[in-house]
Length: 270
Image 1: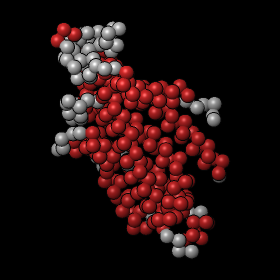
Image 2: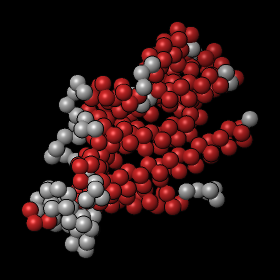
Image 3: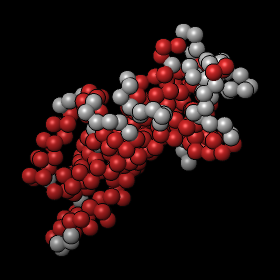
Image 4: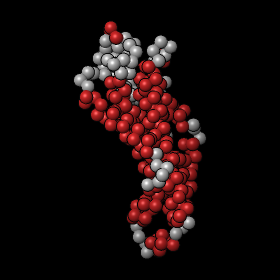
């Protein structure tokens, strides 16, 4: 294990995931319960994160909303990275017409800024967790695909790949058995970066009112609900923003570490 391993970031990320996944098992109250006599109560021993404009417990809402935010983040990053992995590996291995078609497809997607493409797609569809996963996945695979394609070119030029091609080994078998293990580090780095980006994308859409629809909630929708009372109730926006920041920072630190390991591996194999 490298001395630069981001231990604190890893512990923080695991703690947040456990907190979100199992936190509600220790509390019998509901995240949806409204209290007319506890509207915008500040953080206290009774309400750890305070309450919102409807008197709902923000601590419980952070737990409930985190389930949606983390689900969208991890699921969309996994789908987007897998799409990018497969398209990039196939384009890098096949070359020729397939590679040219891949380049045109990537350039077409990159013509539009990703976030505005997200806005355009969401504005025509009723948002839900599944819809956001699909939309964020569709708009988030290009960078992974380009990295995988570039690395696949180098792998395809190796002598043992040429021998396999001469032996007429099935192309799918070559890609899965020989390309995939060598491309795995790029996959995991892209996935880790993608989770943070997906959580931020969902939060931004929800903040603009285009994300998760009530009664469902995410960290982004909770953050958005505190805009109008930020001057008198800072905690409504602060705590969901803190959770988004903590998860994103932890993921970026872990991704940077994985990228460093991948670069060192590449230098050692040269």
